[in-house]
Length: 138
Image 1 (tube, one colour):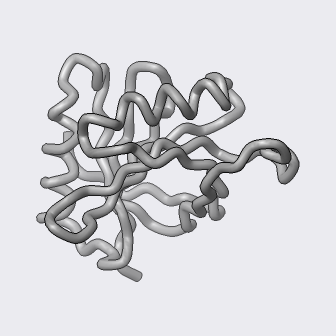
Image 2 (image 1 turned 180 degrees about the vertical axis):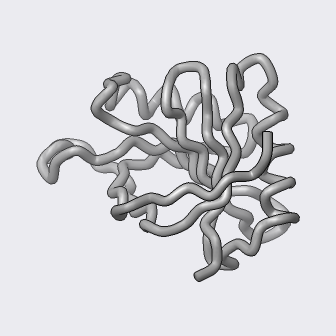
């Protein structure tokens, strides 16, 4: 599948759970997030990652914030996915080939003119498929 350009029309406020490590802690971060925000077709779910020092990758599982009072009693990180143009590719049945996610980001980072202050964004738009995206430089 070829790289496509996707537009996120509006900033997306999110709640985030940081993984204890990458890639080992990713599943646990998503499980913790879903215990707070169970799957709902009205909410979008994401994975957000970026490089940190020493060659490490920081990773957050994220859920779209639907209202301002959702976490009145929960202490949780917040993040805003900025609107704009993103280069990306969809991966069907990603659970059958988890390494395809990392391979797709490597391809995106070597072929697209990305925002150097950006991040890698996984949008889990249903239970089987994911869209891997990077924000394009403006």
